[in-house]
Length: 313
Image 1 (cartoon, rainbow, N blue to C red):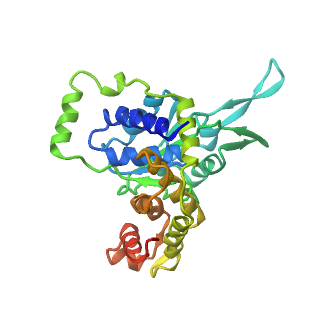
Image 2: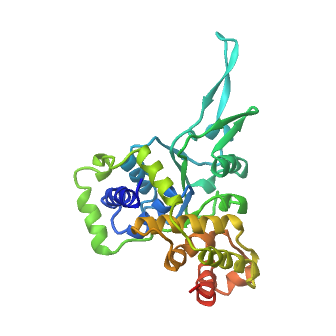
């Protein structure tokens, strides 16, 4: 697929989703960068900001298999992965796949499940496969997780461990829209939700072709080193107990390639890396209590790094 063809598919997909998600152009753009670069996305925001609607609009715009798992404290790993059930007629065990066997999976309120259940997602998100009873099950050429969590509600939740957070290429926040946009949302839903009328603007083959095109986008060695320098610098920051690892460097470069392609460019620019740095790196940092109480945030630390790290000529 040529860059122009891939850009056309992106524009159609972007237009389809933003026809439902009012005022969320930046989040949609980054979400698609996560999808087309082979990553997963964590949506962290308050209730009612459209996190679930965004995942549904994405699936409907591509015509992919979509499943939603409502994470709760009593959810078990087998409720996600599936299990082997004994068939009396065949006198053998038959594997019955769980909802993780989908192309787009919405893990709703993922931090409400126990650590044991959360860990069931690690292999799937990292290796695109799961292991059940010693057997490997491939999840197909496209497996994309959109997880949600509420950043201010801690009662009855289990914070995601560092290994789980590191599996997400991006963490995004939708935020509240302005008054005019909120009024437009209300007007659009007088009769029915616009999501019910959304039609696919591309298909699985189109997305897989875009993913291949993303891999062909060129990035200069100097910019690759710039991405590495940004990530490595987080490991030396005062007050950061755990900096970002190599998976962050990989995600930053891959998603930057996707953004470049979306803009019709055949190469990555420094601005692409800078735009994505906070979304890719911040959620991987573990800050000391002293830094948190001082009012600093992971995002502010990344902003300072971007200011201090020289940009390659």
